[in-house]
Length: 361
Ligand SMILES: Nc1ncnc2c1ncn2[C@@H]1O[C@H](COP(=O)(O)OP(=O)(O)OP(=O)(O)O)[C@@H](O)[C@H]1O
Ligand code: SF4
Ligand SMILES: [Mg+2]
Image (cartoon, rainbow, N blue to C red; front, side):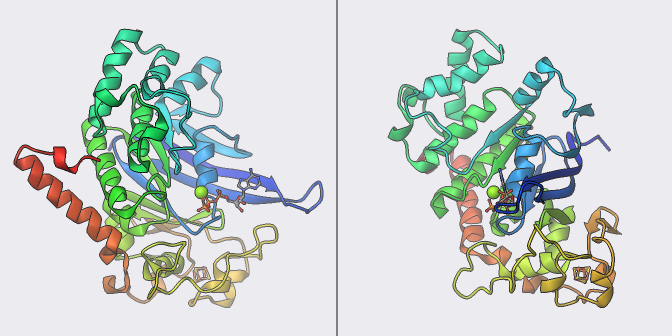
């Protein structure tokens, strides 16, 4: 088996507690370990505030971890010199939720795409211009639009431009932090399928941070579920959705489609996450867990360990949970999931008939 592209081990990041005095801090990320393989997608899911974006920014080296390790192709990403950090920044790119905020409104799209290539010394200007035109085509836009400004595009088109910009420096990994959440559902489906196509064509890996379990199920090869700053379950996507071994994951799947907004007819997870500034001993999910036992709150936080090979859970009683019926999961049959699948079928039909133009935004 080949080595993972990126490995994070035991990452910790704390912040000051607001109004908590000089010394008081809480751990937004509390010992997170994960890995992503070359050319694959790891999804990171969990409720708002569980630390997903903080993990993303640690992996991007936008913030420094208090402790832990990040290895990119075996190289320690936390011990890089200036030149090494520059290389790292080329290899690990980001796409944020709000494409408008991440694009300079005064910059033409041509410059948005050309500048990173020149900055990293990848090619000369003529080659960069040629490549910018190819990138526009790759993300379903046209080279004739290169002279435009961001405000002249729709939200979905701007996100395509943000994806093209990330791809312009031929990264190994793109961290996508809620990249489709701000988009209309039908446009979401197109962007999700675009990401899949680009992965197939370029071999880029994604870490896909999302609230949307339907999209995650469609897109990700592996999933890490976060709760209160920790990864509580990790598995191959089909395994995780088919046979979750943590009561929190089960609750999320039952509350799907989106973790954050209980759509009508879907129960939201009962109770509140623990106060991160003042965590109780033992399992942090105990206050909301239907399977909690006295021993759950007696010792340290349960470690993430293998229940079956490749499937990790941080529940002390993972092996004793009642069987999980796939039918309990709402995530496969949501409007978003159905739209994504329908879009792909329609696009494949058009591609077979040699005309994919009609589906481009
Ligand atoms: N720079 C910061 N200073 C202080 N607290 C922070 C900072 N960044 C994040 N936090 C806190 O850390 C916790 C985790 O935040 P984070 O943004 O990583 O969560 P998230 O899972 O991405 O949430 P969402 O789904 O809403 O985007 C939150 O309590 C947040 O308020
Ligand atoms: S360790 Fe106990 S409280 Fe925590 S998830 Fe498992 S059963 Fe629930
Ligand atoms: Mg976030």
